[in-house]
Length: 82
Image 1 (cartoon, rainbow, N blue to C red):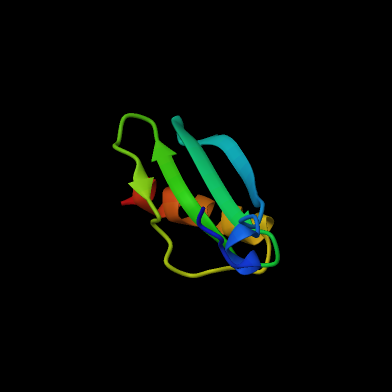
Image 2 (image 1 turned 135 degrees about the vertical axis):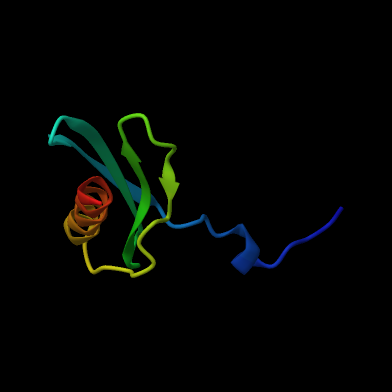
């Protein structure tokens, strides 16, 4: 029988997720942000209409899910504008 230290038995932190769905100049936008409990939030994925998904398009971390979603939305609108 293998005995593991208590530290290994601790559960991983809960991951909170939030999404934003909107459109901009006729293009559908989907943004998903993740935040580990007690950690910083980040943009997990941005999808724009027929384009392939952008995985982790914004490299910064944010204090809240709302800030991360807004950063993802800014990224998406810049992609559409160009």
